[in-house]
Image 1 (cartoon, helix red, strand yellow):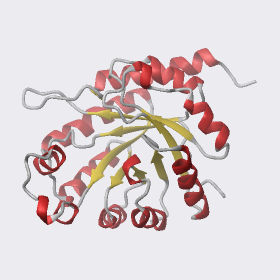
Image 2 (cartoon, rainbow, N blue to C red):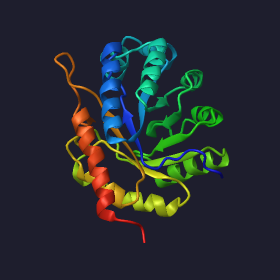
Image 3 (cartoon, one colour):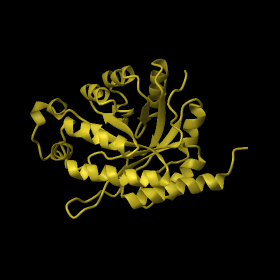
Length: 266
């Protein structure tokens, strides 16, 4: 399989719902993290998450504020035309565009917006209709593996190889935030050994002041990295696993320091 996209040294900023459904706040996030990326000369993709909420939420559960995920999705809802404007801002800031679709319709929207890269969330590992839709989009794909059994990861790798999709696999621990003793960074080496022709990365949920994890992940062979990002304001709080611009700058510096300490490959 011929690789067309270079995943090496790619840093993914996952905005997720940290835009809080506020268009101006989302623009501010994009502009501030775009500035950091340019300052550090980093290859960056800023990632959205798409759910077509009118059909994604079952009619029997719409308006249920007692279910935290439904409440969160509804309270941070943003229209697709707003995301289209945000996509343009990401590109103007010199970053690649990326998105996690949680339903098939969102893949169509990704293609309409000409978003560069698709992310498959860990929770979508068994969603065959969605996976087929993603494969048919013929875009680079990054697959997360949080909470998956080895046979599930094997199946995903086989699926995307059979579909001739250009893809990378991310080691991920689905604990938010992840304590140090649950990071299991050694597994990066196992993934590299098991799938030698697949780029292996590290999707992080550790405390945002932990800069050692990316250095260890780099030493173990990870070549692309993902971190949740956002901004703290008087109006909006930020969760414990999302980084502000200053923390991302230190995170990127830690990666470069790890490369310097490792030296050239022999």
